[in-house]
Image (cartoon, rainbow, N blue to C red; front, side, top):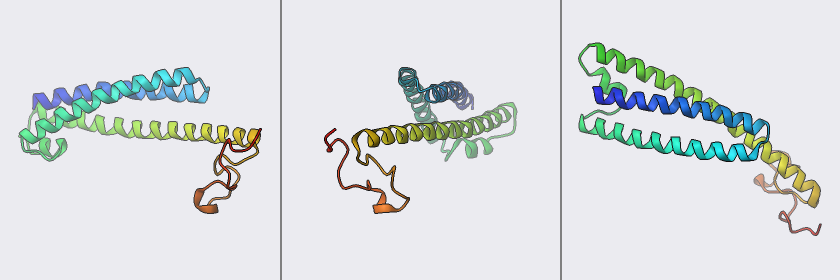
Length: 155
């Protein structure tokens, strides 16, 4: 049980760091600070790699102890202080993962808005459709309105 608690604690620390980096990344996206976004993305990548390593340890622990997932394995354990601690840590982790999901969804929206802005400006400069910017939803199955591709037109 101590091994699982240790793994979950490490995951919580990394998830908190990931949430912090995701918030910084959102601010950088809002302020269109490309170098900061690039740096933060690299930091996020290293944290995610560490989280994957810990998740692999967690799966190995559960396989070794014949557990399907951490919550069901903890539920099968005898009552005690460690079981209560493991439950609390799993609940915190679930809440934190939900916050991370929302934060990364928001960042994805910011990225999509930035891409739309770039597509619009490319369309204006090249007088061609770089994406579905000028089309209505459902036009041509999501393909550009014009048949030519971006940068085909002479500027």
